[in-house]
Image 1 (cartoon, rainbow, N blue to C red):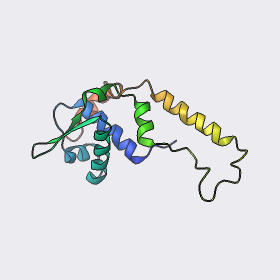
Image 2: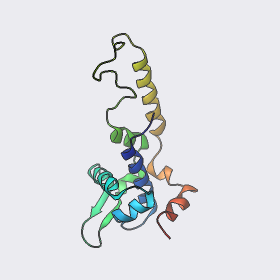
Image 3: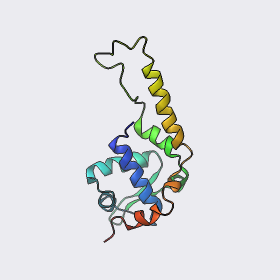
Image 4: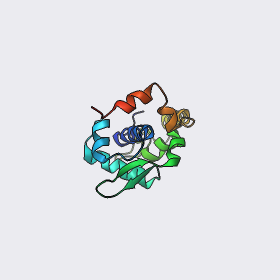
Length: 142
């Protein structure tokens, strides 16, 4: 299974935010996680709507991790960011001719759920524990 680019960016934003005090600007975040500002801004907006980031407008504004984000389940977060996608699309146009009697789709669904279930007990705080914390603290700082 491969995560969408926006899910990857979202996880990196939350990990970085969990290690920083104060506000981070979009430009600081984009530089630190090495993604285009435009892509990062879209992901920040989605995380804000999910209640994981707080945003402050204005010249001295920025974003910071919402207090509850530290304990957010990575499995739940990835499910939310990935949406209702399946590993393979059996119902596309044209639909797979094996769709009616295929056992592969069910097996792949179970494997996908096992993937998420493995991530369920892991929190954002778990992802930012040492030794990765020191790496995260050094990102985007000269």
